[in-house]
Amino acid sequence: MRIALALEAYRTHSDRRIFVWDVDGRPVCAAGVQLAGREAQVLHIGTRPEQAGRGHGRNLLHAVAAQLGLTRLTAETDDDAVGFYRRSGFEVAEVAGRGGQRRYLCTLNLGETGNPGG
Image (tube, rainbow, N blue to C red; front, side):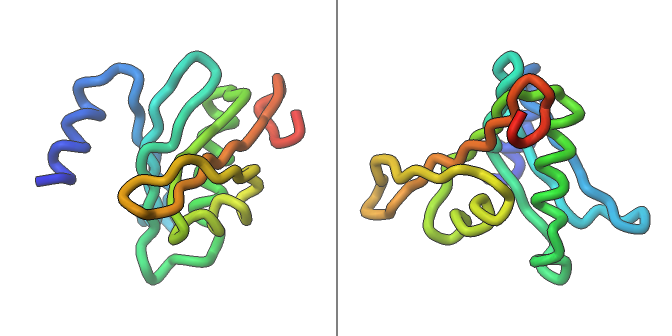
């Protein structure tokens, strides 16, 4: 039910997009973002378990940023995923937690060129 509601939000909100990373014609990773001008927030990202740790998520996020010409890409996450964002080149800052869990704001500054470091 939760997945169905999330997919419906992507269908009905014009500022949301889903992107897929294929390897040998097979989808291995997907990410959903919410756009705000030349900035976007990662709402969802996932990789097939057997494909984890191969850089597909990082490559997908960087490709999305380049394709959309973003100047900034952000994500809010928890302890489980913060390492992924650090390894993907995001700056990480701890923010107010929820439900007793630590939360992090992860920011990839892309500058006017759409590439890390601008």
